[in-house]
Amino acid sequence: LGDWSGAEKNFSESIRRDPGNSFAYYRLAEVSTILKKDEQALWAALQLTALEPHAEQHWRFLAEQFRARRDFATARRMLEKAERIHELAGGKPGNSRREL
Image (tube, rainbow, N blue to C red; front, side, top):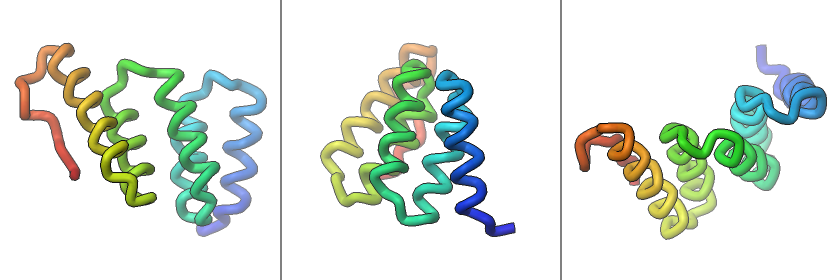
């Protein structure tokens, strides 16, 4: 437990072997956040969202990255994108989780 550097290396290697591995990008972003590697965390979250742009939860995760940087305007835009995806998927407007 707690071998965050080892986890970072493993997820980076997974991405190198399979650049389409969205799970590895998600986990790399989480581990990078723990390791205070904010730029790498943001990069991984952006890659994740680019790989699966219709996944509402990825836009929320990206919003968290911007919120952690105190970029509330960008975080709000990411949450609005998540809300639009939620509604397009048949969800009721305003029933999507809002975290800002």
